Every structure is written in structure tokens, then in C-alpha cells.
Length: 168
Image (cartoon, rainbow, N blue to C red; front, side, top):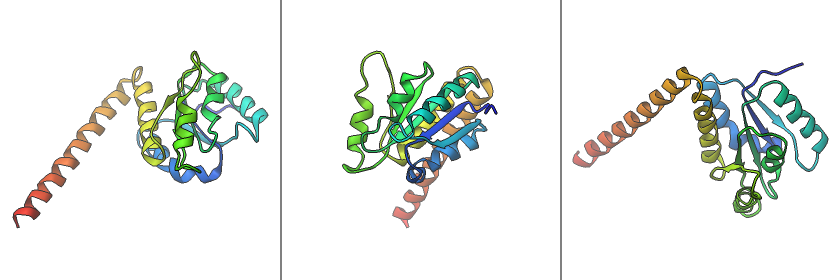
């Protein structure tokens, strides 16, 4: 059975979902097809490899790999694809710094784009995936422009509310 999802989110543990939920919401809000799976680089390496091979055949365009601790998942994904791989460090023993460093220290020739630790990093990874896809999808590009304008409007409204409160 094939899955036509453009973005594949892989996490090392189901407990990582709390950090990735905003990423799922971003992809859903932009109408980007996606798949979310728990596959471990260490505990299910055969299943992970089989999934990646099938995802390549099915036309996956971007992978998001989220893991904590040793955080090898994104690197293993990158070893099996030439598609963009976006790494999200999950807070763990050293509040995610260990994960961040593991992801950022990929060897030359096997690139992985590494984002901030936790929820903010996951949301930005999803937005970056949308940006990658927007390069060949004008509707997504317009949706991103609208998203940015909406963020600016929210900031302006908060500033206005603050100014009113300070004057009051």
C-alpha cells in the first residue's frame, strides 16, 4: 500500500509527539500531505530502512526526523535519501542539548538541517518543509506570504493593546 504523503515525520518514540504536535498542525493547516510514524534508528532499524525505501518510491519530498538523547534518527534518514532531512532535537537528559549537538555534527557529505530544541523547532521544521514545497507550488508560496502577514498583524495588535494598557 503506497502513501502519497509529501512530508514524512518520523520520531524515535511516541513520547516525542507532544513536541511535534504543532508541526503536524502546521502541515495540516497548509494542506500539506504528511505521515507521522514512530520508528527508531536503534530499536527498529530494519523497519526504518524499509519505510524509507517505500517513502522514496512513493514520492516523499521532505523528511522530518525528531529524536532525543543520541538522536541518530535524522542522520540515518539522511543516509538513505537525497531528499531534504530536517532534524528536531527533543529535550532529553541534557534538556535537548545532547540531541542538538548530535544532530548538528553530521559528517561532511550527509547534510541534515537542524532546528531548535522542542516545540518551536518542530514548528519551524514544518514551516521550512512548507517553504521547500512552495518552491514548486505557487499556492503554497502565497499561503506562506499570507501566514507571514497574519503573524505581523497579530504582533501589531499586541503592541497596540500594550500601548493602550500602558496609557490607561
